[in-house]
Image (cartoon, rainbow, N blue to C red):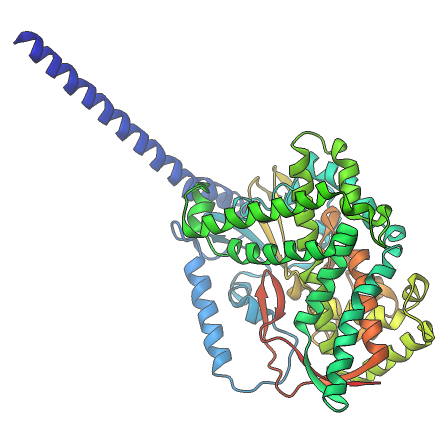
Length: 526
């Protein structure tokens, strides 16, 4: 009997110990959660408040998200009830109505919090200039969305920081130098031919005019360009990768506050399973292209093949798996080089349709320089008017509406001591339409302002940010500008166009700024 009671006592003690351990574990998890959700961000906010920087007071867990949703809802209601409006280019308040409210209350530099992430809004031109001139690697890409976006970008160049980013840039940047991009002009012209033939057929079928929704055609063109440039003759397989990446982008873009606070990404929810499946399929497709060795085929020479260049350099990547390096950076190049250029071309055609005098002026220049031939590297360099038009469109409608950075260590910027962990958020349309910087006509389309380049266009050229800022400026800007010039030049040579009366102006943020309802043009042959 005694041994039974002793055994029973030991079981009770074991149960008590287990329960105690469980309570300690739960308390530890709760403290960890509370630290990440409140204590850590509050420490960062306090350091900035002590420097005189104010902002809307945050709530536990949500930060200022409830206010953001309320302001966005009010703005949507206002736009729905506003009736037919004249096309206006000062749309920043429609994208970020909460910033407008807070700027009026706290000035151009203020604190706000998204979930558990403290943010510093910066729209003061002098401080933006300082950020653009800052070369320190301690001011890197924001990491707060890194877990969410990891399936889309991996550890590629767009999201990496520090030595990893430096090494990747050293490998990839030379492939986008202008001498390399010049060698891609012919493949870009080839990629535009299906678009031109399609539009010619539609115009002929329409008896001389046709209403064309241009968005998908331009995305197909851009997809073909980046596929040919990346994979040579395997661009048909590259297009499959595009379709999968588009689906992955939609899945990854869904908000996931729990993931950002806890870091737990491996719960098999429906959304997570979809992301895992797409990521596995994309990886398989990219590696299949690598193994086929098709990069030596086709009209694109190995020197101009981006995948070939990445493969040649994997031994220099510095640690990590070579396959991961190739897959991640192929996905990065796809994302950076596809929709952003296509949407920029869409806005260019929209603005040229609204301003026929600039359309005629640009067409005359292109026809004179091309003299009946397709654009080549030399003629593209001389297209000053077309360059001015593109620069002005990118000022009014920059595809990337925000520049975000994170202080990876304590760092001083201007007069502000940035604590480690603070995220800096620059609204690009606000900077591009600042009247003090750009003049009284900042909301108007006026390519002539770029007649003497960016330095002659505004008071602070470092606040012109269509391709990003500082050392993290987009590596592919030469590639994108040449691609834009080619498709616009070829369209201008063959067609004239006006805006469809059915067009409804509604710039919308879907990671990039694009026309919510697409763009329709009434097109006829020149």
